[in-house]
Length: 421
Ligand code: NAD
Image: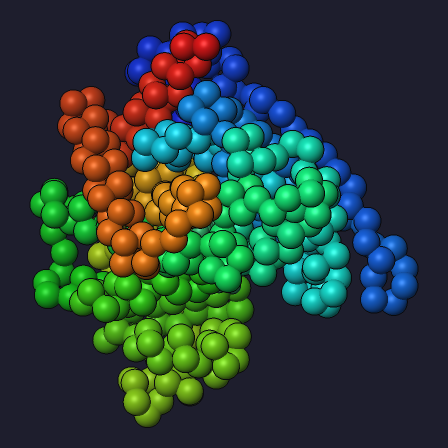
């Protein structure tokens, strides 16, 4: 609930500064469509299993609805609504021809067999098929979903509509019309935004020379890729974590070695420390809560929302927070961090590399013409560098926070689109 209210509070504040007309703001505070489903599959034991699910389409003033599908046991409608509206602002702030949407199924995908996971993915695709399409609403992966799940969904959609239409989904495997570079695009985009931020030379961007220290929460698609890219670019990753545990090593963690170990064991825990020795310095295990409060130049929450709250915001010791997860900093925490001079680079800009990568996949699928990974990343770099410069100019002109500057730009563009039809 806090996540949805926080999102609406930020939108209201930005709308006042951007002078968005009241009737337009009222329409933006509720989604265009909310579809609710009760998905049923036959479990491996032969009994029926049911799963609540949603697709929320927030706004399509600038183009088809666009947004991921989350499989998570704690998903709820408020969260999906908040995430759908974040997609509207994210696609707008980076200048994509899209609106915003999000979907979710209340399920722990790790508790299902592969057969059950496929059945559930196909059931969800059947439910949303009447509401989606390449020029209507284009789903993608999010937490708990991956290219295999999107391949099943795209296949099911094709069976129902009677034609294979790869542009109806993004985040597919390369074999099924996905884009090279899509998987790394979110982490890569976060690196580009951080690179541009550090080049500004502001007070907060003056780092511990010569190896800026980084703490990363979450080691999934987003966290693991940004950890690797930052490691390769000379950053010192001092702490990482996943849902099972956290590692801390002030001298720097050997990320390629952790990736190798995690590929074998699937988790980050004390065993990971032992597996790293003797090639890397011994490291200590920590809890996720402790991890957020470690001293570092840059803190990167890359797991779930609302992890930095008014309780722990006074204890954060990083100079910069790069929001790679969606909504990791609660609104009250944002105000505390701003007062403390900690710069927060907001999710809708920091993690927008994912939707930019999705956009390039959609373009390639529509044209049936595929690009190299280098070309995808080069175009992502250009798009995000331009978006960052525009937000930086807005921030400078308004004398406001990064988050407010992003929302002012995003809202202005969407409101303009709404006025024209
Ligand atoms: P993922 O499922 O691949 O990884 C999530 C990671 O977070 C895992 O390592 C998991 O163990 C960890 N985690 C879960 N609960 C945790 C907890 N309580 N404490 C610490 N770690 C925890 O998901 P992802 O795709 O990497 O997404 C992460 C975040 O980034 C989400 O907020 C998502 O909405 C956002 N995001 C993802 C993309 C994308 O392209 N995948 C794009 C934009 C935003």
